[in-house]
Image (cartoon, rainbow, N blue to C red):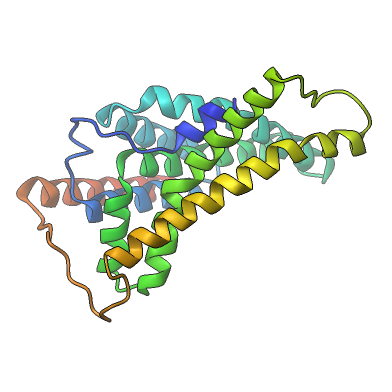
Length: 241
């Protein structure tokens, strides 16, 4: 399960209409999808938002991976549904809030699956965000799934050596995670050290205004995609509101 979640938001290069779009167009498209998800307050609006997200997933050839994310997100949706019922909301309202969570997760998943970390970095620099903030965000996007997979491998290795995580009282179970946390922390420190050396070799911070080797430009297909998505968003907003 954790392995699927780790890979569920990791970018994979594909040859599709959506993947070939400029990163700024992808950001606008994802913003439209998330905005529709947040504005949808009835079953029709949620179905319309889900239809647009499904269209993007099919065009980007990421429908199967997004479906896996939604399967695990369903567990949290059930919790949201139960909490809303206990809080005094009606059955329909609780179902709408739970479904809205699913649609928002699908929107975020679509953005991460069709946009590479390098494109993240370009968009954030294009927005003139602080360089250190851009670097921290891109590093997190790159290494959080890697650390999750390292944790899975370490857990499997320790279980093969006889480590039992499901037996005993809560205190004993917490202590059982120490043989997992220590190698994971050591591995993270080693990765951070390698990253620091790479940054030093590349003279990170030597200049206040670093330049890029490539400066992407919007093509005709990018402008067409932006126009179509804007029109679709405007029409969908009219139907939802």
